[in-house]
Image 1 (cartoon, helix red, strand yellow):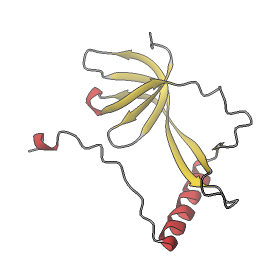
Image 2 (image 1 turned 30 degrees about the vertical axis):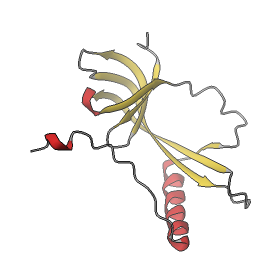
Image 3 (image 1 turned 90 degrees about the horizontal axis):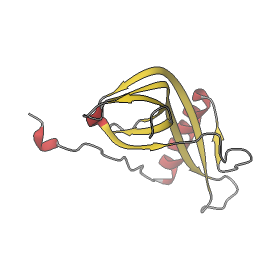
Length: 129
């Protein structure tokens, strides 16, 4: 049902891939076409309202991508054309702008003494030799 559909795949290392699902096998290995790595940064708004956040998003073009099934954490269908027009909470920026925003956010967190929590997707550590 999801063949030839645009999919978002979250990998164990935390990367988010967006591409067209072309094929898969019994081990959940898959081939994605026109793949991009989606990087996102969520920061509080500058207007002083701490409850409001804004999400900056940048896509890095990768092309044809083969994904090993055991590295997939989550997969779902995505429609990039819906809801971005006039959406004030998501802004699409270039990779350079996103990296600059990440540096600024890191400096802001260091000044406030906040720590960023990293998600650890490392399962099966007991199987590592």
